[in-house]
Every structure is written in structure tokens, then in C-alpha cells.
Length: 238
Image 1 (tube, helix red, strand yellow):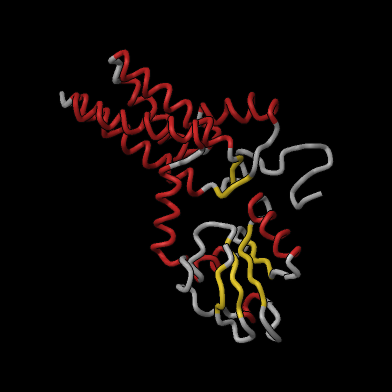
Image 2: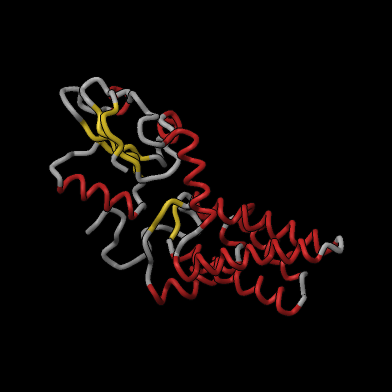
């Protein structure tokens, strides 16, 4: 049984409490709701629907998933029937929701000010990107977050030295440091791969040690480094 799994088949991540991770299907379901409502607004001319979507996104971002209607529908109706999907870092889809809320708010404001062309253009962008995410799984906002994270310093070579004493890692030879989260599916997969390769990764739980993650510019998990006995980074693995 993998870390976080339960023999009774229960959820590994609580949808309303484990907010730093999320079932990967949930953001896609939310994108479907956004796409359908945006398309409905564009085809019917009821541009007020765009404001409703924006407000729903803002309320969910501010007060949590319990107040996000598509999220509640997914977690209470869809997930119990399909089962839990892969658990991923919640920060990229959250950023995508922020971008969506901004675009939809701007679209609503443009319509209200009589700039229908501008409003429609912004709404088309949201509808197109949300539909793309639903159909292909490619989330433009998520990729923007990851790109921003790399620009902030998590690309290969940027982290040059890791303090092994602080992490409790051995200083007798090369070591693998993995930044992880106990509910992250990708993190577990990376850990299993590293162990299959004969490595014994030193795990740093970002949910318990966020200051360490910030120190080494780890904005997305999983992330792993190979270091020498002095802590000098030799390779970024993920």
C-alpha cells in the first residue's frame, strides 16, 4: 500500500482540509463548468453570467472549496462514483483560477462600460483556454505558475548548495534530497523511482517545513537534487 492510501478505499486527501494538494480531476471539472458558462454567456448575450463565474471563482479562492459550487459538486457527487484521481500540488490550478477570475471580472466590467468587443474577446480567451484544459489536460494558467516558479529560482543550476546538517542528510558521500508532500501522487512516484534506481532519498516534507522549501526556491513538488558530501548540487532530478 502506498503512502497515504487506506485499506478501506477512503480518500487520501480531504477535499476541504488538505488545501495544499488536490485531486487532479477537480480543477479539470471546474474548468468544464467555467467553459460551459462562458460559452453560454457568449452565445446568448447574457454577459452577466461572466460576472457570476468570476464571483464564484473569487469566493472559492477567498473562502475555500466548500464555497466553490463546481468543487462541491465534484467532491460530493462525481468523486465518490469515479474514485479519487491523482493528487497534485494545488498551487498551479489555484493560480489558474486567479487568472480566470481576473479575465472574467475584466470582461464583465468591459461589457458594463459598453465595450462589448473587449468584453467578448476576454470571454473568448477564457472559454478557449478552459475548453483546452478540459479536452487535453493542458492548463495554461498552471503552466504560467510553473514558469513563474522557474523564473523565481527553481530551474537547474540555480540552487548551488544545500545545508545537509539542517536536513539531517548524511555527509559521507553523494545524497539525493527530495522535496515532497505525503499526499502528492507525483512525489510518491518519484520516490519509488529513485529507490528502484538504488538511491535512498532524504525526504523533506514541504507541508511541515515550508521555510526549507522557500529557502531552496522549491515552489512546486516533487523536486529533487543530487548533492555531494559538502551539499553542492550536482544535478536536479525533478
